[in-house]
Length: 116
Length: 112
Image (cartoon, rainbow over all chains, first blue to last red):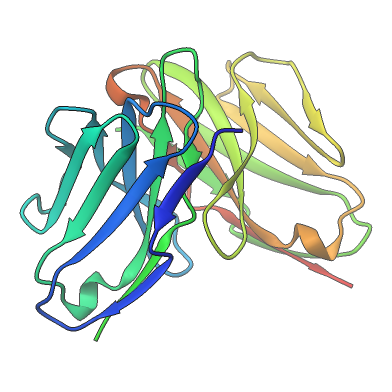
């Protein structure tokens, strides 16, 4: 299957700082990338969908100004958690999907964010 | 609103047992249903189902979809401790972005 690389795999930051998470498709062009958040023992919650070159579409209840998503190229999307607070601590996972012929999305390894 | 419901929420079995995990869904413009296995990190893909009645198999795992009754099952035969994980069911609606709607997952624990 296609490879999606997410970096970093874990990060600890101080309250009030910003953290950037990268999601790269290594062997295909990702026209669409999805960002999910997962709390312990809960399922994946879609935060936003981004298409290359256009603004991300955020799910209801997700703050656009807090979770900045950039999808500037067909192989890279970034999620920046701005002014992080302890309640932002979570597992963030991206997935990427290519052209119409590629019918499934592939997941990155996830990023464990801890805000102290 | 699109919805995916999985049952049971958790399950404990002994090695060698057979388990059946259930996934029911309500979604407008159904495209496909996917099963994932999640251990400690990100989910890994198991199956994608688009047509009713056609069983997909991979080793001891198999899955089938019923589009009339809006559900799918995932079977695992001769379970092993390595099968312990969270199994996630997701539905992909047609439309912009083809985002996935996930169920809450079934936590499976296989005891030796």
